[in-house]
Length: 582
Ligand code: GLY
Image (cartoon, rainbow, N blue to C red; front, side, top):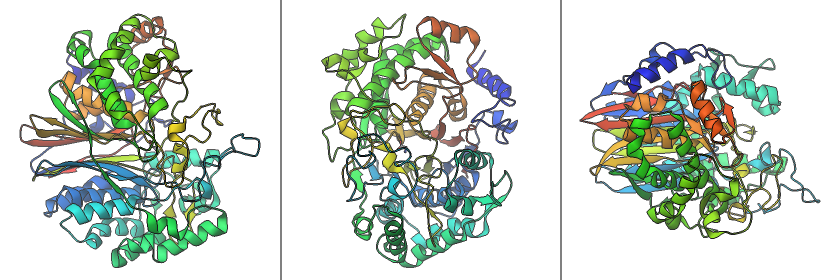
């Protein structure tokens, strides 16, 4: 059976199943199961909300470039995906301009100057529950607006005020709550939401439902101030004053000086190759690009055989899981902010590292190995391995291609759903909880039983380790694919499998994004699978020693593609976005 037909059937089966904890959510429609992507002649945007993709595509249609469209899409997502991203957060952008120059902008949040290594431990050295996830102390200095402004100065062709307008209108007039936002609100309700968040997103104590109108007039006002005064309003003007005053009143660490000092960082993309394609991806302080390239290097020699063993077969899944275990072991041991720690990135993404690890893949041919036998740590036979990344549910990705040849792949976040759940009074700003992406307690298990490493310990001005993996793939020197995802550590596996679905299995962009995925992050020693995996494949994987967990492999991938003169895009049906173009 052709692969597209297989996936189509699986999607149809999924119409009645629960994904993301929702029963038959609105976004699993019959149309969503039609896998031929819409084709566009001049440009495309894919994001995880239809209004954001449409706003970006409208800019392209009106003569703006991919960077203008990226800024509009990002700002719109800030409003309509308030649980995933916002100007109280930050992000990473991998871009390639029409002249072929590839760059990375890092506008990740930073730890405030008063942050310190043990700030989430009590006097006995024990983790303070919730301190790094909820409330004012969980907030890192936001970078999103500074990032967009930097992109605008370097590449924008339209006034920033014009690019802010669609987001201002959406915040002012409101938009309909969709399934994913309703789900996030419900999750918060069950966990116990902070009052400032409830005031914004709940009605009479209850979270809004699908179809309800959600407005944020104060955020519209904040964005209007930025449109009038520029981003200095946010970093040193009236908005900064409100943030700093709220921090002082509520015991947060961010000061006016922290906001004023915030600067995005230009970086070089990590470069790799995979089966005749060039990969441009995200360097540290994200772990995403490093892990992506490690896995691709490990699997490259096997990939040709996969078409015969089959997408989703136990052989394919097992090998993928084994490669992921090596990459996530390296992530846990070595990755952190390169401004503060030496990260052996060049070694980890080298073909030589993959070659050195390959005997371990062979050793695991029939049976997965014990956890210390993975990654560079195993090769160097250092002390006992540590660490595993936390799973989280926020974050957004979007990708844009224009008729000029510009490509943007950007992942932005406030971390977990609704970040810190802090809404700064008088601003409508939902603030991140990115401090939780640091290792709160190096060497000591945290509240989740996870152990962190020195490489990602908290320090003033440092950026917490991320999994965000905005990526661009070139073929014969030309852009083929821009891809990335949301979903904590599952960002890496979602991006990876989509890319491999295109390159190894010849899927179109929609098939590649929609196909069932797996996830393994080394620790816990669990292979997460989506529900569609057939029983015989599950049993074969269990015989190889994998502990399977159903229904938790979800990430939400967005991708755009340019092939044979045609643009196409795909938004993951798992989150309910929709691509747009013209
Ligand atoms: N906060 C999600 C990430 O950066 O990986």
